[in-house]
Image 1 (spheres, rainbow, N blue to C red):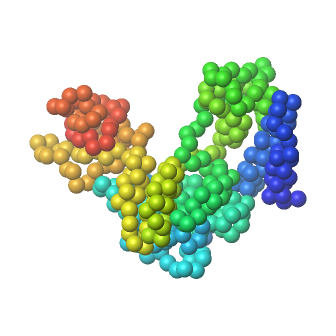
Image 2: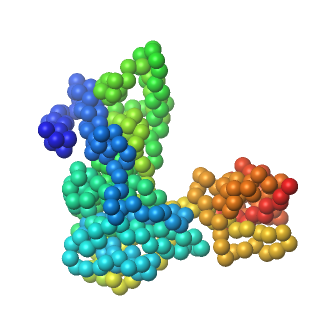
Image 3: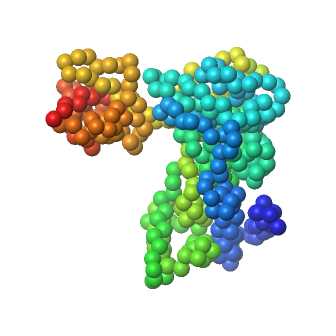
Length: 368
C-alpha cells in the first residue's frame, strides 16, 4: 500500500469516528499517524525538505523572496513579467511555466525577489504533477502570493490552502504557544494556563504515545489549542509564512462583485492584464514582509536616503545593521548614534550593538 493510500485510509477512519470523550484517545492517535505519514511525503526516507530538482533550485537574491502559487492560467506569469520586467512565458495554455522563473522588483529602495512557480494541481502535495517541487520552493519564501481567478476564488483558495497545509506550510499563522519538553523519566505532566476547549488530556496522551514519548512536560498557553497544533509542535518541521490572496482578472467583473471580494481576509483584487490596483498589491506586500529600512549617516554629512540597509524584523539590531554592511564594522564600533522611531530623543541617542532599530531610522557608526 502506498503512502497516499495509507493517508486516505486514516482520513476515512477519522471521518467515520464520532468525536466524544470516549473516542478522543483514538482520534489523537489517528491525527498523529496522519502527520507521520504526511511527513513521509515531505521528506521520503527521512531526507531533506522535499528538494528542488532541475529548474527549481534558484539562487536567492534581494532582501526577501515572494513566491507566486496558483493553478495554471490564472495570470501569475503576466503579473510577474509586469512587476519585474523579467520575461516569464505567457500563454492561454495550461502549464506554460515549467520551472521557477526569478525576477526582482525594487520597493522603497529594497530589492525583493519574485519567484514565478509552475501552476499546481489538486493532489500536488501527494506528488501529482510537479507539485512537490513547487511547494518545496514555496516553503522557503518569506511571503506567498496565492493567485486566484476572480471568477472562482473561494473553491480554488480552499484547494490550494489544503495542498500547502499538507506540505507543512501554515498560512497567516504563528507557531502555537505549546511547549513539549522531553525527559528521561517521570511520565507525562500536562499543564495549561488557558482552558482546554478543543483538546483534552486523553487526546494529548494518545498523540504522545503514537510518537513514543513516554516522559515529558507539556505546557499549553495557546487559547483554543487543538490536536493539530500539538502535532505541529512535535513534528517541528512546520513553516509559518504570511500569504496574500491575489484575486486576478477584476476587469471581468462588476463593481458590486468587487466589493464582495474585499471581504475575503488578506486579499487584494487586481488585474494583471490591465494593470489595475497593482499599487495596493505592492503596498500590501511591503507591509506583510515587515522589513526595516535603515539609512546611513557619514560623519558631518547628511544621511544617505538613496540606498537603505534593509533588515528583517527580529534581526534588526545595530549589530545586524553593521554585519549587513561589513562584518568588521561591529568589531571596530565604539558606539552608534540613532535618529528616528527607536531613539528616545529627537536629537539622537547614543546606543550599543544590541539596540533594536525601527523602520527609517538613521544611524551613524563611531569607530574606536
